[in-house]
Image (tube, rainbow over all chains, first blue to last red; front, side, top):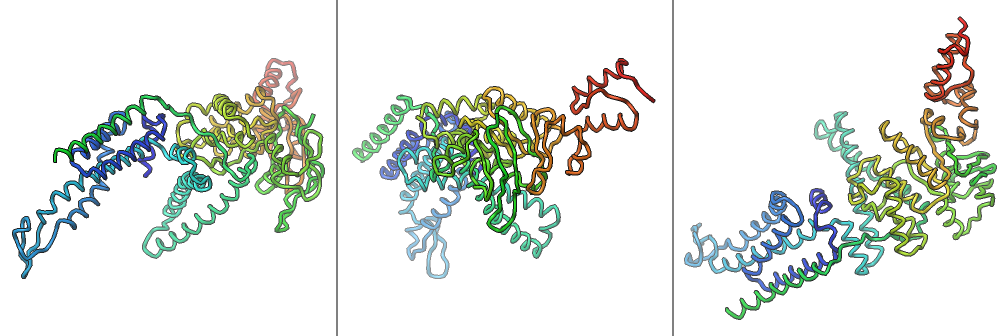
Length: 259
Length: 285
């Protein structure tokens, strides 16, 4: 999570208005799901990867690593879809007979699974495009601009900020404990972990008090009024977005007509 | 002229702890005032009384010679004019975005958007935050966070900036950079600066006046020259001389070297020592 965060802040596409990025990514995601075609998914996968690696500046290595996690889930779910039992070995690829039944890969499902893999990967890349080019702080701006309930955005903002403070505090407590052999053996580990949890709670409570006072002394009146960053809202980004989406729609329509 | 004044200020917390007792202090405008005191001496409580987050139990707080009126509008005005910078910047910075956090105080004043942006940019330049404005707050160093915290207060154009232990946790380089930044702010914006500190060596270099707070009472006050001329009183209050003043004291008492004036800083000591070396003052052995 923290590595995605870091890449987003370093992204070269960061200054582009996040609204354009998010809407484009969501529309593309939607088209990919509806079209359910190899070609459309392939185009999305290529364009998204190239944008992330070449234009945003995330290294290919990091992108591949990030893809490993969802892909491993994908593989597990695919296995459960195509691995089936049957009494007729002709339905199955590489059937294995165990007592009266045959077990193997269902050939009729292969096309379905192929489309599923392509759709899933293109959808994941759409989401990674948002995550790797727009830091959380920019996502909050978008939420404020599209008039999401203010309280929710404020909460999200505070939670995001203090996740880092909390992990840092937890880490310090953990180091302090382990340097005094707090995690030596199972019994000590359980005890130390309990202390760590209760200390974190205690500190968070005290800190919330202090933050409230700090906010108050800067004129807090029940709302976190802040201004948002100015973004690059160049016409060309809208144009790119519209062109790409139109190409995807045309491809999917042509494919339907041909078949 | 004093911009903030407290008269017989007492503050008792809800649980009965008497945090402040008959505190009378004056903060001069455009000057740096130091509040010295150990942990639990009541410094933080005093600061919160000064910017109207806490209301005195008895006694008065005067702002620009007027007794503070604790109605909503006036309280907001007080908080705008008296900025408070906390010791731990993590207690103060609530947003992960540097720009958003700095804009908070000034957005609460209700200025037009362009004015807010202009002020935020100006303050970021003045405090040197502009170099890391695009980084998230959690990726900043302690000293950088401290600067952002100061910028977030400065952006409201306060007349007084109160800093709780501004140098705590900074490396020596960071301390001198921060103190220079504060001097610059004081000279450019003409604000009064109040700092709580343990660092006695900072007092003669950066401060114009100092109060010593002990168990909620002001036990000693004066200009740095005045205070360091009374080493015994300082020691009674668990404080010490600056390193240089201590050296001068030893030279005087153990080696019988007579100095014309007291010296508390390196530059003062240099002048006095040169006088002795060049023979303007006699060396009695």
